[in-house]
Image 1: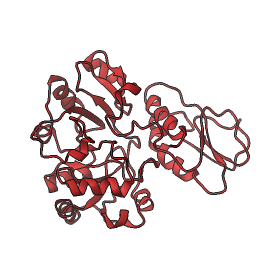
Image 2 (image 1 turned 120 degrees about the vertical axis):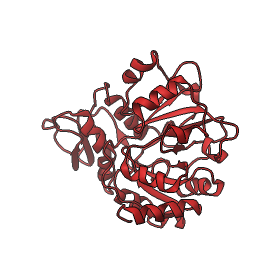
Image 3 (image 1 turned 135 degrees about the horizontal axis):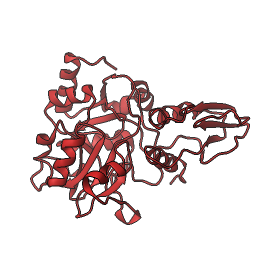
Length: 319
């Protein structure tokens, strides 16, 4: 773990160029990054995470100009990049046949998920390396996403089998939920994963945005049914809590008695605060000796759509 700065970025860039992995902060969560053009580096990401090979990766780029050689951009993509890049919006776009990318990042598909992160540490690393960087969340596959450098270190105590060579410690992730993922490979935009850029915001720019269904398959990260899961079972829409359960509350919780441990996403019911706290609090409640995590209802509106998406996946049957 190292404090960001010019020497750290140079070291990170050298590691990426040599095929190693670097964990770094984005405004959403911490990413586990490797050279997206290096088959061995991308394979190392899958190996470190224990990630199914059919689950594609997001390629992080500095800006629209860096995305141009990788994907075909239409007017919709350019407009969204102008409005939301850098920021927490990932676009799934048709892959260029001559894109200098490992085929592994697309998991065999003819599309690529690209994003330009806003976090200054992520941007400095991308600028120093000059590479497109494949970077899923820096955690074991299916586990709760990391929002601090300590979370990353806890996930990879052995350095991901010595694959992870550097953690750039850039503080707590501001948003705390992974990016919105929007599929622009067809005539109608499809929301594959909700995030802090909401469907309503996107529709003010694009018109109608469809919601992805099971028929879409796994076209982007975070679409597996069971994902973002702590070790303990998660029970949603709780209006009571057992004596051996932990409680993940939202809003006033003084009328819920019992529980062995409790944390509140936002006592005042603030969605942005709840999103920022979600993964860290799920991790904190995932403790031995407890029977499960009971989660109070979160309103299905605005950022609550993304929060509930992550909670439903955390509560889904494990497979």
